[in-house]
Image (cartoon, rainbow, N blue to C red; front, side):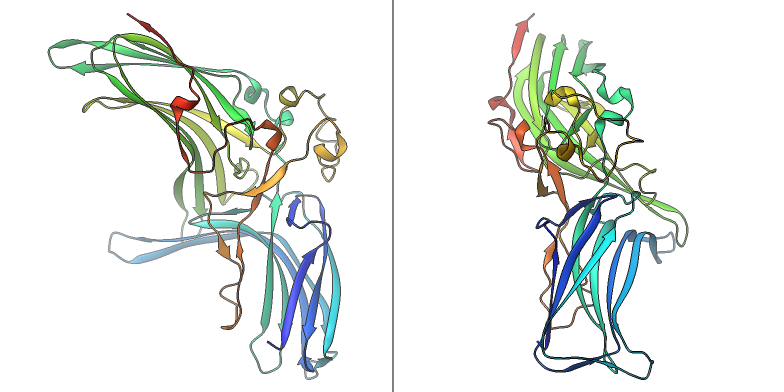
Length: 398
């Protein structure tokens, strides 16, 4: 290879930034012989993009697509003074610095099946009479979602009741009553969701399994050629408790871990890709009976509630400098680590622009995970756990 390009971020090996922060770094061109260029351009851009195909009633394939631009800068580092001229890059190592403020409205990075929110640095070598050569480096942007400034409802306890009768032949139907309790509906990655549940089952049709699922719900929206919506359901964490019981009253206590995952992203943050979360509790009934399902919407943030980590609330969100993160300004809050979301896609950024001989690195966004919340229970995304190792069951047989 005649030219090699290495892109680095200043004091940020994880390449993770928050909306409102200033991104700084440098890129180094290593040239082993004289090269003639029309220009060397540094591009920093970020966008939300959706695309998928569907067949209409006449079996014609329609491609739905859309894009929203959040960040777009172009800096000409070398440029010929006249279109007919070229600039010469001598053999050796050439280093260029760059800096860019990330707009406050940039949504969090995301890689999904039908769309993405992606931020990339591109170094483009405009070559005369040849295809342009492009070097790409993706980075993660996170929009601060401070649970302390969300609606007070996310801090309130959740109490949910479901009652349903399950028929058994020749036997009068008796209801199965489920009472579900959560201390709140807002969490951050690294925490565990405390779930308290009681089953009052007076029927003869046995309950054979409880399933708990933390689900990520993604809505993809496209405006072209006409408005269309596509949904995706992704399991973050799953827990199963197998047993068989009837005509009894039982109480269960579970801890459901939250692995690294993007924060909640509503329409106000991105109008093409919305991300929400729901806790699903499914009671499986033996035989052909329809299962009983409870769903609780959850908010996943990037800054935890103060009562969880024993600290005082921060200044008003309108007056607080968004570039000063809470764990930098408040010594009572431990800093998070950053990890990839195992349930999301890995991509090769710039694959459509790469030369045949180029080797592209895989990229997956990283998200904050507060490891000080962890205890002896560790779990990976999409991993199914045996509930019996963490369940405190109390039974009263009727």
